[in-house]
Image (tube, rainbow, N blue to C red; front, side, top):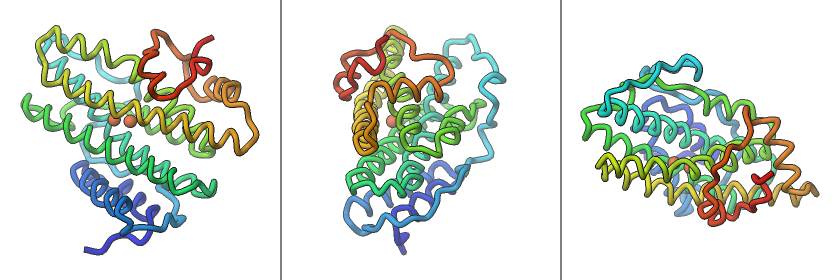
Length: 263
Ligand SMILES: [Fe+2]
Ligand SMILES: [Fe+2]
């Protein structure tokens, strides 16, 4: 089997792949090849603007999403499906960061971080799909929305906007909301899904941390003050402001200074 020559070639192949299971497999394969040094050049091939997607789920505008069903079994499956869809997008978002901003000439640690994020997201997607199968469902059974990829498109011109919106706002928001989800699942006796969500939340702390670290790196390089820069850009990129309650423990663990999100 021939490996792609460069990391950005690998990113392009993963992004273009429509089949989720194959996207996951390629992520593990190319991720390991980068980590083992079998792929060692970053290269400069541009990522596609739209990742490959399977024929199902049908993608709707967020506003057109059907209301979640009331039956508790179906509601739970729909929740797991919605998170699986986020994780699939997260795989592509990580590979997109690997390939999109090469002109910034980041140190190797930048690629290392986002390749590891892609591998983590692939693992999350795989775990959630396995859980769906235990519940007699599969990825594609429910409609999904394309909001996350819209976030990628609106921030493709500047790595600062991307880091502000994706890891520092959307993924950090995941840190805030997950504890309540885990609690609810536990209260409903779905320990398997609760454990899975808790494992995912642990990894997500490191994704937010990578976002903060590289955001501050770029700010320093451009001579920008991080907190006001974050605040200006978040107003521009995030529809709706940052909403409490904030998970201070997890955000602190991710190295996110409270000044970023407190008024
Ligand atoms: Fe994830
Ligand atoms: Fe993540």
